[in-house]
Image 1: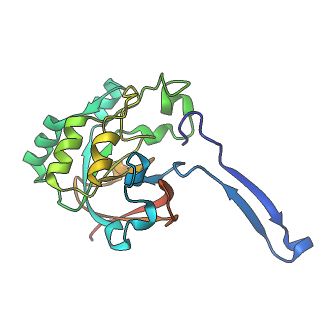
Image 2 (image 1 turned 90 degrees about the vertical axis):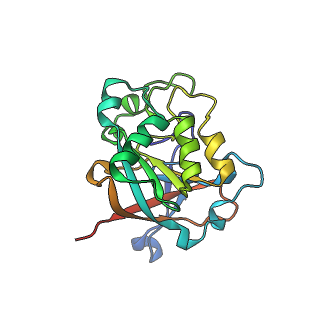
Image 3 (image 1 turned 120 degrees about the vertical axis):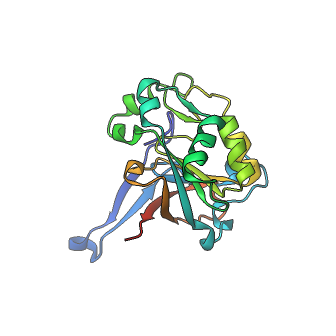
Length: 214
């Protein structure tokens, strides 16, 4: 998944075993391609970059909000604080130092950019996301990160990126382009994030794993 207008991911073979004795390629990619991490520096001058996020911060308890039904009814659905409070009433307070993950079901559209984005350019997108009041409550609860299975934690219609401008200044970083959140329970999963520690990076591609108890 790529944000509209992004530089495409490119792969160039530079050596072949038959002719050079080894196989190697050059990879060209935006920092925010596919499943990736947004560091605070993405929207905050002087904010932490990817390499400043310590390895120990990348193993987190997860709380997973399943909003698939609401998102199926409305592709512009925005998760607000009231839904988070209802979740807490049933599953307990959001985990301080943990990750708040929003399952919209949009990862099923990963091979169909038109359905995934709902529009042709950044000014005409339609997909679900977090809302500012949910972002503010997540900060209040002390979560370390928020994540979603769409291309952005902000809903597509939120062209001013209010969630980015709320969470990243509070040093709450993002995971975007997640998949298979529907396979996780509301509580009990541990998320492990393998991310390229790019020096000075505003973000980086990531491999995100969830561990479940027996």
